Length: 365
Image (tube, rainbow, N blue to C red; front, side):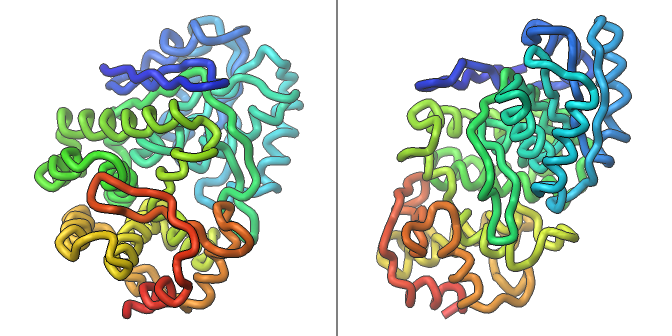
C-alpha cells in the first residue's frame, strides 16, 4: 500500500491511498476522517451492484449510519438535473453539516458527488473512492468538481478537496478493457507533460499495466498521482501551473461535446488520448517538438489501444470543433488557450496559436 499526500495553499492536507482491499476495510479507512457517524454513499447503478452492499456492510458494522444513493451510469448523469435531484435526496435523508458524502464510482460519480457535497449546506466533507483507473489517477485527486452544460464539459463547478482518496486496485479487476485503456490515457498524459523517464518506462510496461500486473499497475498509478500531487500543491485552484494537467483536454472536450453525452460513444480517456496526439502534432507544426517525439507518442497510444486519428471516434467538422474549443473554460475571449509540449516530459500554456494551424491539424493536414 502507498499513501501520497496532497497539500497546498488553502488546502487541508489529505492522502491518496493506493492498495488492495481498501473497500473491504472501508470502515477502518474512513472512520477516523468522519465528523459524525453519518454517510451518504453516492454511486452509479453499475458500481452499486458490484460494490455497494459490501461497502455498506463494512460501514454499518462499524456503527456508521450509511445510505446508498444511485444515479444512472454514464456521462449524461453529470448534469444540473441529476445534481438537483441528488441534493434533494441528501436533504430527504436528513444529513447535516457534520455528515459526509462517499463518492463510490468513476469520474462521473466523483465529479457529481463532489459538487453536491460542496453545495450541500455550503459544504460538507467528501471522501473519494474511485473505481475506475481514470478516476484513480486523475479526477478523484485535486478537488475539481463539476457538471457539464450543453455548451461544454465541466463548465459548472467548484474546487472542493476530499478528506481522503481510496484507490482500491482490487476493483479494477471488474473494469472492462475499454475503461482500462481510457484510464491509461491519463497516465500517459501525466508522463508526457512532466516526466520523460516515466514515459520511457511506460513504453516498456504499458501492456503490463493494462494486463493488471500488480507491481506495474501500482507503480503506474502512484507515479501518475505523484505528478498531479506535485502540480496541485503549487497551484490548487488552477491560477497558473496546474493548467498543464489539461494537456490534450481542449481538443478532447470539444470532441466529447460534439459526440454528445448520451451513449458514451466517446469515453473521456479516449478523447484525451486523441487530444494529446493532436497537441503533439500541432506542436510539431509550430516547430516546438521533433517528429521523433510525435511518433513515440503515436506509437505508445497505439500499443495502449487508444485512438490516434479523429475518424476513429467519429466524423467531426473541423470548424465545429474549433467553435467548441473557443467555448472551453480555458479559452480567453473565444480564443482557445492550449497546453502544448516542448518535448516529452515538458509542456507549457500557449496563447494566440494561429487558428489556421489548429484547423489544419483537426483536418489531418
